[in-house]
Length: 327
Image (cartoon, rainbow, N blue to C red; front, side, top):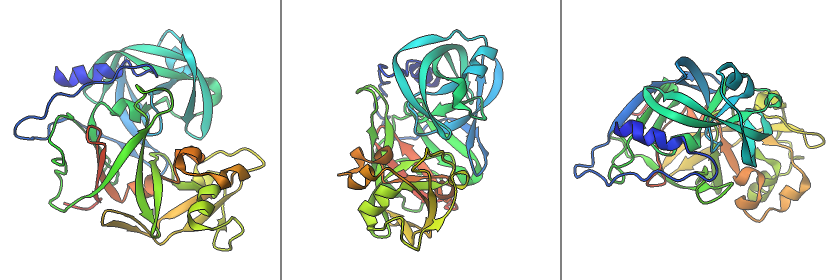
């Protein structure tokens, strides 16, 4: 019942939602797993098993969304009633940034084996043009602690009331630790998007986490952090399809760039490939990440995440990282 109660709190995840309050840590600091999910993994997405009104359905993981979502076609096929949002939401669905006007309450929802009633989702308009039924958001997962083992297609869900640091259960190796904060888009109750700091070629960069497609950064951040312009011959012309993005003219060019190393607290990934996205010149004069493209210098995608085993401790606001093959 405790696990179900935590998931029920997610059903309120509109911008004005109240946050779940985890219980105090147990005396023995035991990490309690409440479910283990088998993900479908491709080079473009992580698909999460859910059941909606009794129908099994795979939803794409979107760590950059506050609210889970269904396409309008899916919502109508499930006979859900669409209601108007009090405030229009900007929602990054796949490659499209769309304006969301509606939401729906799902009478019966299950994430893995965890049930909830009246689970609230955004309803994506037809122009979102995504090839999945919907998405599970990072905001939905924020009431849990969870780990992502992309290389082995596993996600674990855990109660958040453990003692600090007692989370890396799969290895005795010392994990790298990356503190993160939540970049909020709406108000103080918005669970926000994870933002942490790592080191890319000896330069500190603010990172976001993308569970779809490859890693990328804006041309403005590349110039601001590394002093590299888009005329640099080390940038190799590429395309939007390879980068998994959709850009509008005239700033619609894409390049690839191979950095030497991405590091976090002693853990290093060598030669990470990053796509560089063309940008309006105003992004080249950004003061810091809060004023720049996407609120981060670098967005890490599946090729990087697949090399890591990540535990997200939402209560601690800490990421614990090991190599994917650590055991």
